[in-house]
Length: 77
Image (cartoon, rainbow, N blue to C red; front, top):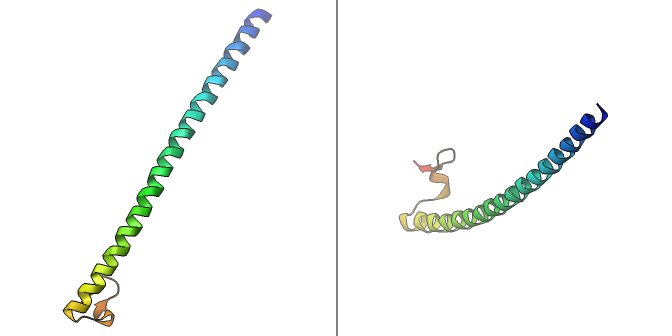
């Protein structure tokens, strides 16, 4: 009985080690995806900034002012 318990404990320890390895691998993958998402957010922020500048220029060309715009929909009235 004692030998069987020792074998069970040994097997549980192996499984715990494997779970830890798997969790560390998962954490590494999540960190990589987080980095990718952060880079995409930075790119989108830059694109939005440029779109704001383009939009502002178009407002000026069309003779529209900010007060002509519906704030909720960003549509000119």
